[in-house]
Length: 327
Image (cartoon, rainbow, N blue to C red; front, side, top):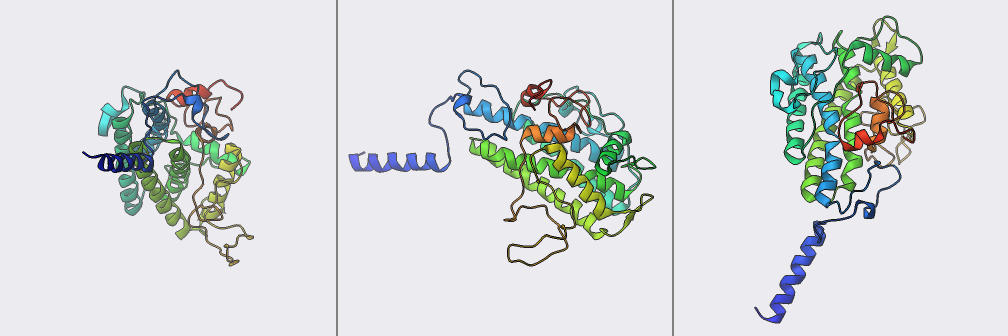
């Protein structure tokens, strides 16, 4: 190989590495990785490699995938992960209070599809990271009821039951995929490996689609009264979104299916519907792990377990927040 050919080959390889953002060293100090102020609290390890760093970040979403898989499986089929793919649970405890929902055939079909998608998400993540046993989760009607009461600022009577009918189940489902997609959106810029980014992007795509389907089904019935509360479906979504904004403690990252009366497009056109939650540039919002835990624990803090995860979520990042009043 002559000098000019060698130079050209070397230059091509260097440009390829840059374009794919592949690190040229096998290890990197976590403290040298720039994290913005909203991203996760992760203690640095000595000479942590990029792949290990990615794995810690990608391990966190397993908590949300377990939560969605169990809720959708039980709601549509009347059984959970232990019946479908028990190896993925790794001996973790089954969820508390989950049950089959009273769904119409069309909604049951959709939720069944979601359920198996979530099982596949767990499998995909565990092919990439070591993972952890399924955490203890509370999917009882009382857990959802407490969140709905908090959203409305008073106790609903009778207590909200997500398994009572299709609309209730869709409203309860409105709580979950959107939180997951904002988490993946927040995670992706911090991943270093192209393989990790591809996995995160693929999961984000399906979570976004699930959320869009749920929002579309609810939007179709936006003006319908949710019985026996005398409150419209649209108002329920607005209340839930406002609660997630309050618990997340980082401003507006959530919107119901009907736009606020002041909402206008960039071109100044007013619009009533709000089928997709998006910022002023029609880009989806993002959340950091601590914001997600504040919402899923239902307490506005990532340092105190509760809500859907009575003992806290699993994984190094989630465990690092527990009992830390700063989060």
